[in-house]
Amino acid sequence: MEESSVFLLCLTASSGVPLYCRSKSSRQLTFSVIGSLNGVHMFANNQDVLLTSTRTENSRVLWRTFHDSINLIVMSCESNASDHSLNKLLENVFNAMVLVIGLDDLINIKNVERLKKDFRACYKLIDSFLTESEKMGDLTQCVDCVIAHDAAILQECLDGFTQAAESEFGCLLTGGKVVVATEKWWRLASQDAMLLCWLVSSLSPHSSRDYPVYLPQGSPTVPHRLLTFQLVPGVDVCVLCGPSPSLQKVESELVERFWKPVLDPVKSCLRVQLRSFPASVPLHHGILGILLVNQDLNKSLYTVQVHPTEDMQRSAQYEESFPMGFSHHAHQCYTVSSSHKCYAMKTDLHLLFLLFKMDVPTFSMRAIANKTMQVFTKDFTF
Image 1 (tube, rainbow, N blue to C red):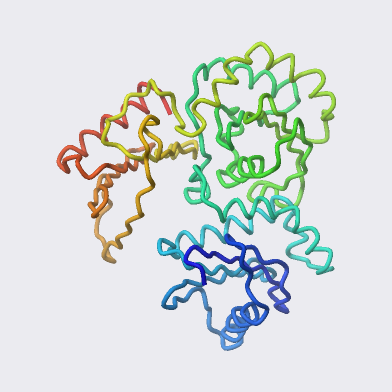
Image 2 (cartoon, helix red, strand yellow):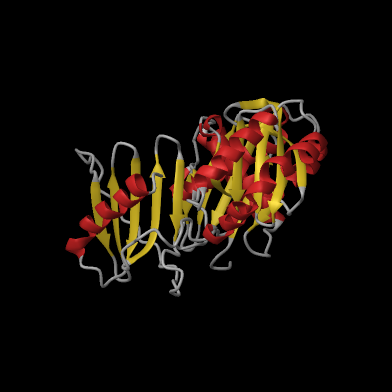
C-alpha cells in the first residue's frame, strides 16, 4: 500500500452494504478487503466486543458506528496519523453527510441505491477532509479565519447586507477562511460554522448559489438555505436564511448595492489568504508556524507561511504522549525535536501554538510566545 494512502469506507450498519469508498490516492480497495474490514467489525459486535481501532506494521484502522445506521471505516498508512486525528476525520465525514443530506435519510435508510446517488453530492466536501490544506478547522473544530485590512469597513458592510437579506447569519470568506462574520454567525455551533465554510470552499467557483443545508448540531432534520455570491474570484459572501428572499432578488438588488463601494477592501482579502494576517503584523523571525484559537468565539488563525518572503517547508510533526494520571493542568509547555521546537500557552480565552526554528534559544520561547499573544489579542484583537 502507498505510504500516503488514506481510505474511507461508508457502509450500512445493519447489513454491511458498501455505500461509497473515497481515497486520498488514486488507488481503491478491493471488495475482499472491504468485506474483511467490515466483517471483523461485525464479528466483534456479535460477540459483544466494541472494536474501535487497530494497528498493523504499516497502517492504522478505525471503525465508528453512527446512530446504529452508518458504519465508517478509515485506514491510513501515513506515519503521522493518530487515533485522535482519524476520529476527527470520521466525525467530520459523518457530519458532512448530515449537512448535505440530512439526518433523517441517514438514520432511516429506505432505498440503498437512492442513498448512494445522494452521497455523490457529498464527495467534494468529504474529499476535502482527506487532502492537505492551509486550514486546521477540521482538527480544531473551530472556524478558520484571517485578519484582513479594513476589517471594520467589511464588517459594517456585511452586517447591512445580511440584514437586508432578511437574515442574521452571514460571513465573508476568502479561500474558505472567514474574514468577518455577523454576531449570530459566531453563535452557531462551531462544528456547523466550520462545515459551512468547508462546503463553500470545496464547491466549484460559481457567481451565486442557493444551496439547501442541514446544520448537524443546530438543525439536522430541517434544511436552511445557504446563499453564496462571488464578489471577486476567491472571495465569497454567504448568508444562511429561510424561504425568503429569493436568490435572484439578493443578487440583483443587494450584492452590487452593498459590495461595489468596498471593492478594493474586498480585493485586499486575497493578499492575506495564505498568510492569514497582514504583513504589517510583527512576528519574531524564528517563528515557522502559528495556530491561535479563540475559545470564546470558536475561531482559529493558522499559517505555516509566517514570513512569506522565505521558502518555508512543512516540518515533520512531532507527537509525544504525556504520562497518564497527570495531576495538574499546564498553562505553558514546550517540546524540542531534531528538526524544530514547539511552544504552547493557554489563557482564559486563547490557545497559542508556535513552531520555531531550531536556532531559536529554548529559554527565549516563552518571551516570544507572550509577545506574540499580545500582538494578536491586544494590537490586532483576534
